[in-house]
Length: 499
Image (cartoon, rainbow, N blue to C red; front, side, top):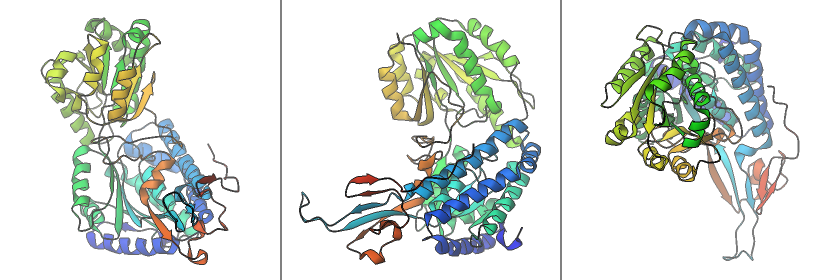
């Protein structure tokens, strides 16, 4: 690789230099054609695929995650880059809109107004511990920021440091081979560098996936700057699942089987893990245990991602277990590799103390809540804070309309007869919900994520030759636009997305 293309900043002074270099790189590419920006994303995707064996081996050594899981995550990361490349090529993130002058406009003569999204500048991205590819160096936030036309300074996560550094080298090398300016992508490491990253005036937005405490501290720091900046944080989610009576009566065993598989997937270290399951009280605890125990005994177990996560998981699990009205249904274990734990309580207990529903146990543990009447479910749901997801299991005989409306008010994604683990990258995906799930109403997964790192600018009565190419009448980039209220499709096909 070309050494000058890779920067690792570990002090505030080094972050300042990296931010200045990134800002210069951003200015150099800010007005580039969509085809150039799109191609850059394809080049990175190809480089990740080319180095897959090496990266997967490093990921396995760093995180204890299975190689098959890591391979799937790397594939997802490369696919996302190619998907974003197609969006960029078609001009979708630009949202170019042209309103020609109209003397007969209904509220009076309209001037010529044209609007387009422009990139914010330098974006700081904090890598997550639980997804060493998908939410790390070239994960969703980094890919979205580059797709928007921003420069990226990525704060690597200590839980997979060797993998992060090698991934950063590969990305930097690919960018250099694609002719990208030096400094368009760099990494920072350590707490001092992280704080300097949030503080630097050239940094115009932050993407974060992590703990509520850490995310809130950084959110407050970003808001306290002389020029506050957007902080797109994913902080925590319980992801409740509500089972209605008819569905429970007809298929309780299959529901419990799906529940067990979902909350233990990846040792319960998914941000969409179902942390609480509401079920009718028609089955007693012993009956539920009889279904869950043999399934959980077959669960694939591994060390948690970091010693810190193992410690915080044990603390959170024990805190919930000690709450009034909560009992152990499946005791699990307190080993270094903990066996899954299922706690149980009832609707009366959580009504008396809603805090039972607000403690995320990030690891292989979950809570079952038994309720008496389906009519009580909307009220129980309203006790919960903002969520990434909420799920309903219902049959035709169940009336879930009021519950569905309630869950729409607290969650970013509502599932029907499904499990929340597994977040596909697509056009309609929404991965974000009301606080504390996230700190904004945007998504960190899917093509809409690109829009977080842009802002709109309108040009009024600017001569056509002086306009950005995306707004000129000739539409030289042949991108998708809305002209005088009519949507016009891009005039060429997109590149193939490699699955």
